[in-house]
Image (cartoon, rainbow, N blue to C red):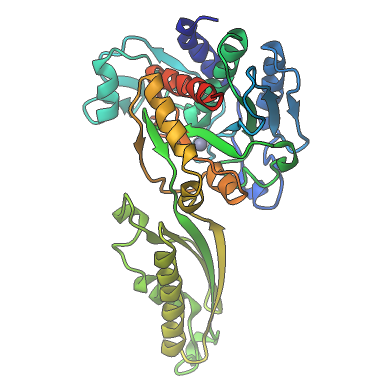
Length: 417
Ligand SMILES: [Zn+2]
């Protein structure tokens, strides 16, 4: 396979994967069912078959829906030189992912792309799309009725094509590579049943990012606080001086959260509080508060603030109670990745060798890579060329997907040395 073929291979693969319905379902995943939807097995089985067809004979599918495979080094580099490439098979449940119908816009010239009714992509309002128009890139979108699923089928296409390229060019030395395609990243449970016993790599890369050359090696520390407000219910006619309304307690508590530290008022390295859910009545009201912060100190400050606000509410509503249940969700991978500087050094070099210019940016969320990093495999995230994730306006740049694939090939070459 010639390097000039990468582009057509990537386009064909991506469009084929995108058409397979793999929406995950957090209501099942939260109860421990992984994969959360049977349909994810369809893509998993297809990938195992396809890996075998391109010469990866040890490809296997675990009962929990993980595709795992490896190819050996073809040089005498040490056995330590092994990297894990990882991408997820599911798509977000926020927008339908059933009957995805990829639309290919060759030689994109910047004119508005009319997808459906009100769904329009405009280079005028999207500087990244405008940048693609400047180089007559090929843009892939859905037909406007679904998401596209570049998150993360673009990542899968990049990994599969890089592996096919390396196997068909045995004269290019590469390190040992392990592949992991996992279910349920979008539900936050992508690494719950990861077959760690099979993985020997000490270094990993997820291919699940966005714009060209963007590398993510930092993410939020994340906590979720369940808050139960226990009021005192009473016949409203005789409530004076006796009733404590749990709904009022919850609403007063929410008012104490700083409005300028919410998801909709922050970006970059700013953290936030976010009430994601509220249910209840006069007697008991329940809310979930998401806490996000890039620093450990910042997270401690947020947790302390929540405790103080809870105390204030108890003081304001004598006889009422506020019960906090504070749970860690994931932590910032930066510290762990900084301990193995080679992981980012090689990645920067690989992007450069592939023709890009790596830029580091923080992820305002968690990734499978942050979970893998916690489990001892430092795993930054590599761009795929996908944009507007979890949206009917999701689009993919073929130039950028090609750069992502070339970056993986360059990484495999760099670790061979
Ligand atoms: Zn993703």
